[in-house]
Image (cartoon, rainbow, N blue to C red; front, side, top):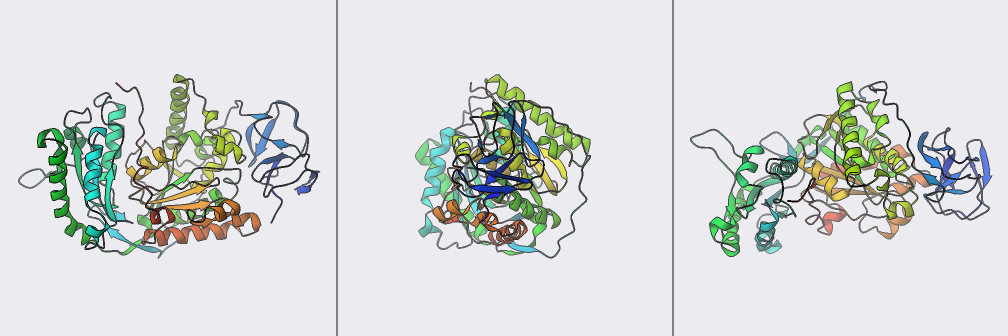
Length: 509
């Protein structure tokens, strides 16, 4: 195993690849030093003298500024490094990469849907439009346990989709439209073979507005067709609504079970990329390895989504240079400026984003975290930028605006149409998100071995000498297998129902 990782010749720090003791000799490029203190895996070590106020560089980029003089061999972390502010040169479209060499002939076994999209799973969904009907949605789903579904082997389950919102918001305002995009996106999702909607009846998130706003009413024929909808107030309360919804759902089971997997081009895959419980090796192993897999999917004409705008902050200049057009680059910067204003309204700094666990794992500033996070999306051109939960139509690499909080971020990407999730973690996240499978990629071997029941891929082998590209190819092949039905660890545990978490912006009225 290597002692350290030296990422760029312009860096004045390196990263510990294992726990190091004080006095150990390390070599990084032209630097040969001794550690002045114990260093934990994933933490940074100064390679040269760094003056107070001087930029600290990792990945060849600025991750912050020294708050005091730092000697070679010292640990660089929160006690002597702060984010500070610096100007980024966005240099729009100056480094647009050529299209990757096409990858043809790769397929997965999925479900073809009427709208042309492809599902990787086949669920029926009971969607609550407001928190007031959440219990009813759960009660309905609970009626259809594994015993009852045994006669319908092609249905992965009955998914109750519940949340904390749906009322106390401006009618037709930003929060209302955002929630509608999420609910509509899950209703129309290719992994959902059928759904019904349950509401209370008096909420701001009115059923009619949702149906029209999200195109859930199908026009044509003698009369418009709409999905099954149930109002608790119209039907006479909890028990009556549960019984009516259960009768309707029972009628939907045979049609949903008729779905069969068949070979579908990998171009139909829409991959949501996410990192959670990150550590100092996230940007060294798992994220760039996922980036290799992302490039392969783009080469196969698929789609890759990078979200977590608050974890792009400080690295956005790398993406604007890859933007296909200035308009696309400007859309990203508009979102960055919105986040600066949004957080300032509440007296919050974006540099507060690294969590205590992130810092325990070696990450210090939001710039450092972001520079490692954007590696998930690979190296291809940025072709579009989407609002939260907006339907993703483009092929290639895109950005979706979202917070960095994992459940909220992934909920938005799934609502946008993602039918696969690749989730990197260093500290050990156990995240899942029904109805979409979540492949868990671990950044280091100790965490992978400790939490092997929750981890799918060990990218920590990169620190032991396995080529990054090999792990990237392993991730790509694993994604195709999961898309074809292989269950991820989170699916084996049944994780994913409680993680539905729409982004709620603005005041609660």
